[in-house]
Image (spheres, rainbow, N blue to C red):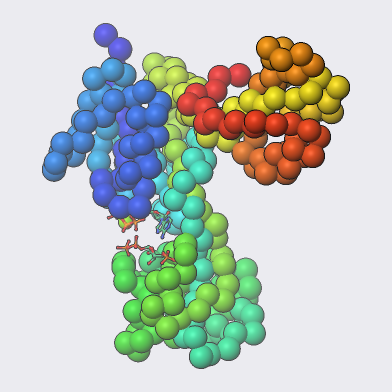
Length: 286
Ligand SMILES: Nc1ncnc2c1ncn2[C@@H]1O[C@H](COP(=O)(O)OP(=O)(O)OP(=O)(O)O)[C@@H](O)[C@H]1O
Ligand SMILES: O=P(O)(O)OC[C@H]1O[C@H](OP(=O)(O)OP(=O)(O)O)[C@H](O)[C@@H]1O
Ligand SMILES: [Mg+2]
């Protein structure tokens, strides 16, 4: 019998839902019963551990878990020796320095001899060192944004996404020091068996991510406009072209990358395409 690969994901927080959804989209079932901290998949050689995110890099380094999902910020701050297997594209955020709204900032030197509250002392001291700044780092584990208003620190260094937490605490973002997203990490000494399970997982993640980055497109075009239209939407190999029941017209099917989407739609309309349908793709295997 094949062993199960052990995958650590965040129990509850900003990474949890997207981590669970990712495995579900990969067709890997995981039951998350209330209060359960471990779950064995019923259709894949995997066992899930639900943990605090800060503990995940350490567990993966020690081999208690084979794989894990964490924010890059937590991974780098932890300084644990694990492999960064794949960036996952969700939980995107940045680690930034923020100061009280009414104060001015003239670059890193404005932080000289100031006290800065953060949960990320390693990332912050690296930034300060690179900029030749001496500051007093005040480490706290949460609710960092409150620090200046209660006189605990002059500035903060914390996670920012929409910026609304800073805004509601009278702070402004003045310097981004690190960009982060969720990453899949792996133990450095995976067994051959676990390596082959990881390959299967990566194959599925790639198919899911590719599908999310692309759309299926169908359109009608007059035959004399086909060369121009085909040129705009090359697709995976080349578009499928089928005659319509009405003389002189064809139906063109292809795959479009999400990031160039609207430009291509405009170009297609200008080239004479009509009845354009755009459909999400569930999985995409190249
Ligand atoms: N506002 C946000 N938007 C997007 N991603 C975020 C945001 N806040 C945090 N993250 C990312 O999600 C990760 C987990 O954030 P969360 O706030 O759930 O952590 P936590 O409170 O430390 O959780 P835990 O209880 O597991 O220790 C962060 O390390 C960061 O990578
Ligand atoms: O820029 P924003 O969109 O406001 O997001 C930033 C906030 O999100 C995170 O906290 P979270 O809400 O996850 O709560 P936590 O402090 O309990 O982890 C982070 O620690 C910031 O406080
Ligand atoms: Mg945490």
